Image (cartoon, rainbow, N blue to C red; front, side, top):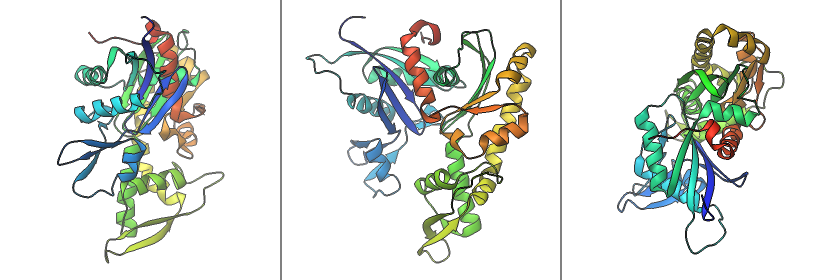
Length: 337
């Protein structure tokens, strides 16, 4: 492709966007932009915009360009990709480099949504765009040899979607993509706080509660300490503090996690028998930020009676796999005509 071409891999997530260049994670930022309403000018991207989220006045609004793994705001998505590419320190040259990109997308999205991702990347300066499905990237990132004639089941729980796929011979044999994931866990926590404690908390606080004391089951071997939560009292309107424990959060998240369990069982039902025999031996692999939820592996094990393995550094497993796919361009990625 020539001297001026740079290859980058992008994991375009609902919650976070990760860019890999030269085998290194060079950008890891929240997928959020802050826009000035009057002028339409974008004033912050990533961590800076995240700090403004929920704290803006009427002239500034924060937007998450991706919802459920697909582009909801085309203009903001294109600008976000462009600004994040600018964060990469390319060696200074007179001409901007031609970019060849591999972008990771959910496996359950439509052709129109795939095209939106491709168009956004091209508007942001890509000369050539290839796509890879998230569960495939997760499997490669975990270190599974996806080209072997052996079935592996991968569950990737991200911010907007949970992807459940059975992979063999370098392709996805069957997959189930449901729009229940990290964002839904946050809104479950917000709702629980309102109903049980009469306290109003924002999206960022709900996310913090999930990280500090989030759990999928009440039977944890080493439970986290109780966590103080600050928010607005719904009766008096005055800010107050309450303390929550992991058992409460496990109760709040139960409904969403049950939906993920059902989807896993559905995917197992649709699996060809020879691959089912393989999965009995290899088990289920968990990736994505949602797999960090305490006790989720234990709960899935109880439901399926299969061994459940959590990937190391599950937050970046998909990005790592996308980076490897960049090297083996023709094996794992596909083009949109």
